[in-house]
Each structure stands twice: as C-alpha cells, then as structure tokens.
Length: 263
Image (cartoon, rainbow, N blue to C red; front, side, top):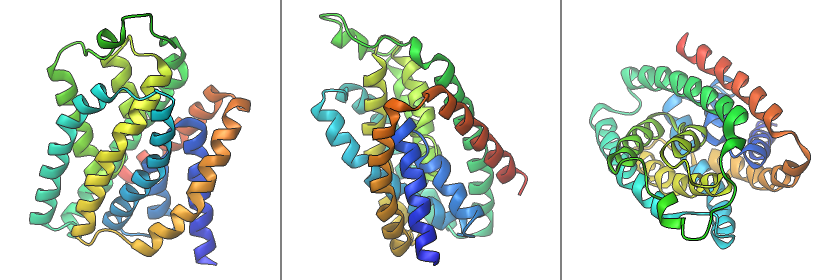
C-alpha cells in the first residue's frame, strides 16, 4: 500500500510538472517530508535525482524543437555547478544527516518555497508579457545578459539553493531568465530552464548519493509514477488555464514554506 502511495505521489507531481514546468523539487520534497515522514536530507537527495531524470526526457524533446538556448545554459551552469560542488563539500565535512544540517535544510527549504511561490505567481501574472518569437538576427543579442557577471552570480545562488533544498531550478530559474534575458522568447526561456536544471540536479544528486543521502528504492517508485504523469500533464496543458494552476500552486508552495520555517 505504501508503494502505491509513493507511485501516486510521483504521478501527481509529474502531472503538475507537465502542466506548469514547476513542481519537481518544490512539491516532491515537502510531500516526502510531511506526508511520508522522510528525513530532510534523504528527501532532498532523492528528489534531486528524481528531478534530473524526469526533466532529462523533456530536454531531449525541447532540444529537437530548438527551444533550448545552450549558450544561456552554459552561462548559468558556469556559476551553479561550482557552487553545487562547494556546497556538497561543506555538507560532507559537516555531515548531511547531522541535526544542525537537518535544521538548516528545513529552514532554507521553507524560504526557498516562499521564493518559488512568489516566482510562480510572478510567472502566472507576467509570464505572457515575454516575446514568443525572435526576429531575424536577434539570436545572439537575446542570449546576451544585462551584464556578464549576473548569470554567474544568480547561477551560484541557485546552485547553492538547489543542492541544499532541491528547490530553485524551476520557477526561480525561470524568473531569473526573464529578468536577465528579457529578449528571449517565453518558450525558449521555459525550455532553457528545464535543460539547465538537468546537469545541476544531476551533479547535486550524485553528490548527495556519494554522501548516502539517496533512497534508490524510493526513487524508482517515484519515477514509476512521474514519467506517465508528465505525459498526461503535457497533454492536458493546452486545455487547462495556466494562470489559475500557477496561482493555486503558488498558494500551496507558500503554505508549505511557512510550515517548514515554523518547524
């Protein structure tokens, strides 16, 4: 019965990710902690690989549709991957399962969820304002940030946040892209954000696995539900009002964030 509950949880999160592009870490980690009583360090580590594998298939599809800007992925990864490795080194020295780290993860996760809730609401309200196509010759200009240092800085913040909490590569990443690359069309922003999340969550997830912070049996059950869930969610996307879904999701994330901070 418990196995079916994990598969259903994966299916539910998969549908939300398919519908909105958000929810991998933002929903799965608090679900594992609150509903299943999984320790925060195991929830974060397992969810990082869950996010990596669920978004990997989507990246292949988006890359074939030419909706991934690999220059932007490289610019953000240059900041986030080193930050993730440094954070993993610190976790290894301190001990991921220690009481102090558990408390830090829970509190940081709470604030990350509040940030994600705000970013999700922002995307629901303002996301459609982004251009949807690029004029001829604007490819390089659209992939040029407001300042060369900003992708490194924001990438480092997201890399640290994702490694500590498994949250941040989705809605927060999209919001950062909207701010840094205002000329980039919305479909390319979403596609680039999903592609950028794969190497980051894979590096962070494998790092957590080396620390013993991944439950492989749990991961298999979650993926068994999430992969068909994403397929269903992506097919429902065209028939569901995106703004309503994102607004409700932001309320849910804010609630989970407040509850985690109050623990």
